[in-house]
Amino acid sequence: MTGYKLTTDRAAVVAPAIKWLPIDKDTPVGGKMLLINRQQGIAVISTRRVQDSWTHWHPLPTFDEWKI
Image (cartoon, rainbow, N blue to C red; front, side, top):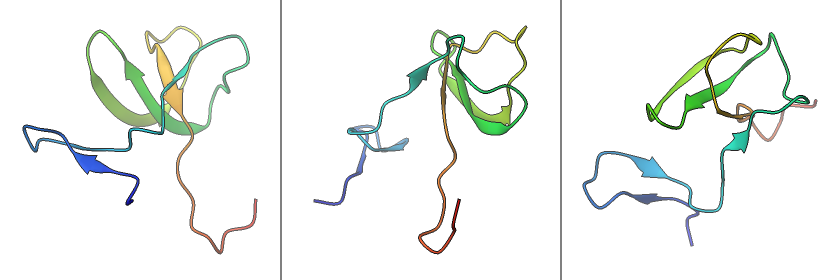
């Protein structure tokens, strides 16, 4: 299994096992991450500010050789 697939309309590649994380009090502020407003459905790479209208987030991927 590849872990990803094309949507039926072939408009996007998705990873069904990876889910957006709801934004809550523990969500980081100020660092770049994937952000989305679920109702609007458009994801961006940006920095989160507390006053923003994002509803969900996800960390950015890394390469295997990166040490965090």
